[in-house]
Length: 107
Image 1: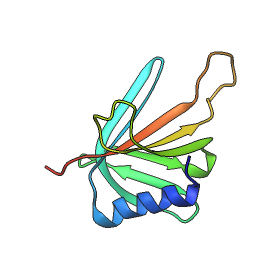
Image 2: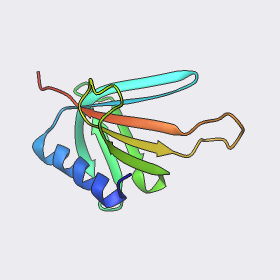
Image 3: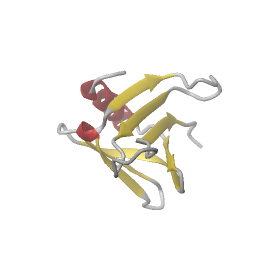
């Protein structure tokens, strides 16, 4: 696990360098993925990623249950920044909402 402050440093680095990233999340009945760049990081912990066609995801990181950064188990992808949020409904069998960020090669 890493701290919120460490996660914000990673997002700020990606923003400042214009690093292309992929954002991916899914739950039982839905999934979403976009490729874009970090365009906003607040000191309070709000992060926004925007794609070239204006699709956007915005996260309030202080609400996360945990944040980790490192290799994915398969080892076939670049390092992943994984953020997990509490489930929207507290019921048995409902899992955390996880959002993964991967650096991708520039085209």
